[in-house]
Image 1 (cartoon, helix red, strand yellow):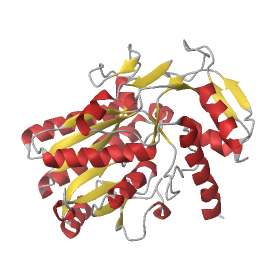
Image 2 (cartoon, rainbow, N blue to C red; image 1 turned 90 degrees about the vertical axis):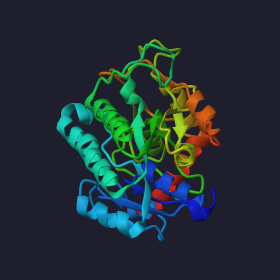
Image 3 (cartoon, helix red, strand yellow; image 1 turned 90 degrees about the horizontal axis):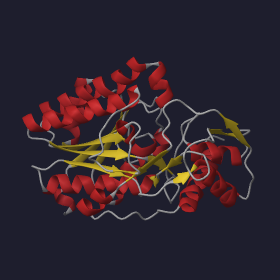
Image 4 (cartoon, one colour; image 1 turned 180 degrees about the vertical axis):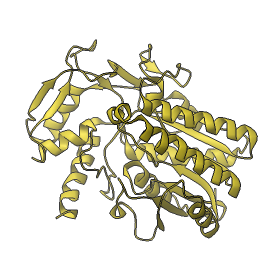
Length: 335
């Protein structure tokens, strides 16, 4: 695809963790890109200076219409939303508003403006507690919390809209996203983040006293929960490939899992952080969190077969090293 044929891409939540890496991947591949972000959990410093940032909300129809007109938007990558599972249980209406109602408003504005391609940031949480070792896209979707339901509802909206209007979509269901841009241009910057690798890196740099291990009696090799960790830059690359595929075949929509197809336990991750940082983390054993499955591992074969995607950073120590480099840079950025 030549640069002349690349439509402008609007990235919602583009100043956030995953969104900012998608912006970098798009720019590196020569795509024109703009961002809308209300900066509640995003940061201007996460974006290249030459990327237009519209500070505002994705349910502001007037603002969206202006952006689409000014940028000539032909595709949307939608990352804006709320992502903390326990919070979704405590405040479900926040999640149905931020993740479902606002997505509806965004999709409606896109249809009105004739935007043809839409890529949605979904989640393995739509599968709930699966009964299989490796989760494929055909695994039944049975969310166990409002976060998972709020994302699944948006998946359904996109399917219905694509059947009724000239729009195709890509749904990417993420497993555990971690790491940071290898060039340290962006990373996980949110204060109070709950991601294990982020928390462990903060502890290794004395920003936290300890790391909590929630449950040691799971049906896994060492008793701690097992997850499939994917480097955020590999995930961003999958978004760019998905966009190319949607443009190449406008009648086809895609739904794909994003992971590596192998898992690491909490203790294995913490051992790796000890190894990479040359520190010994203080691990605090706590009770299980409600709804945490023993193991959650993707089957990424559809992603690989459909897009020819091959990860460049599929190594746990590499993921941790990149997260560590970003955390150190973040300390400098914040003085």
